[in-house]
Length: 160
Image (cartoon, rainbow, N blue to C red; front, top):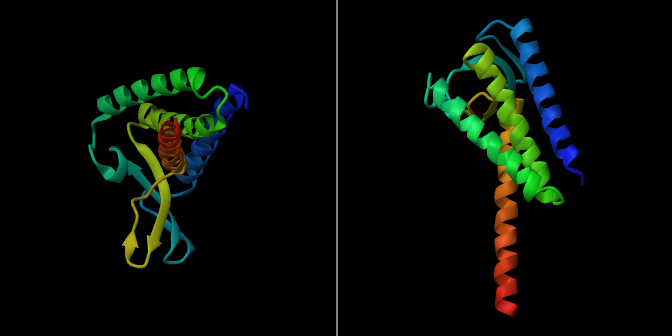
């Protein structure tokens, strides 16, 4: 796959993330919750000035630094290692888009707009957004791919 497709995927994630956040900000009051599937999936207008699960509240300077470092790493890795490998390029595109989507919120509002509220039984997951989903899926695929590559390398070394 071409490198431009990975960056294109990141742009799609950023656009979808920002569009959905704008819909929530303009169409819902902060704290308002609307059931999509009652007791399972709700749209809940929420703001998070921290990281995942609300940790590190108000540490915006740390998020800026981490995002810049991660972005530099992703661009470097996409340009050098993932250029012709979609098993790395696609997940990196997802992570890049997710990181930038939440970075835009932090720059513009000092907090991230979250709205996807999922319940399983009595457990309520932390409220999240499209950028968060892209980050989790992208990192998950990268971890799986790295384990697969490491296993393949070990098998090749054992056969030599």
